[in-house]
Amino acid sequence: MLEAKKSALFEKLFAVYNRNLLRRKFYSIEVSGLEFLLNKNPKLPLIIYCNHSSWWDGLVAFEISRKAGLRSYIMMEEKQLKKLFLFRLLGAFSVVREKPREALKSIDYAVDLLKADQQNTLWIFPQGKIVPNDRRPLSIYRGLARIVERVGECSTASLSMRYEFLGEFKPRIFVRIDEPQPIRVDENFDSKNLSKTFCARLTAGLDDLRNDVADGRFFDYEPIF
Image (tube, rainbow, N blue to C red):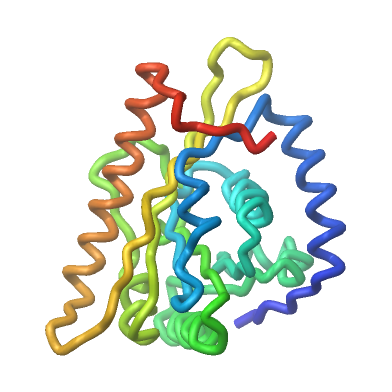
């Protein structure tokens, strides 16, 4: 697997490039629930699991991470990371979900990152591929629940993204972040049931986001540019 090689200097430089790129391509990024990341529990590592409907998702995640001041790592498909190798300097590391042994290495690596420092945040797209937002039922890989099981104690938050043309020349990006939920592994822990819970929470977040956009309920959404 390809490990992350975080560089603070490169992150600062890329942040300028990324912000300018997003401004050129999109009208705005509007976020509900950013305060949950700004006020996250400093004593627990955080896992943010997101839907994956666009190539832009990772760049939007990077922008939100910078806005919230998170020290982030992100799991990324290996064939894509090989093409975008500089993303390793931003905290990206690879996963090959089709090969169980290779996937296990990525899970081990993610667990080590979260155990090494409670300030670390892991971003993960558990659908494993780009999927239309409104496809149901939503399905996710169980690697997310296995990471939680191995970490033992952490917070998890679902994050939903949607791209919409609403009258402007460029599309708007809407992001809904649910309040992080602390999880502590005990003798009653069931990774299969937890995976179902994650799937249900992400589905609910996507449905709520779709309804907010359809009904024009934007009072909870604050532009970050």
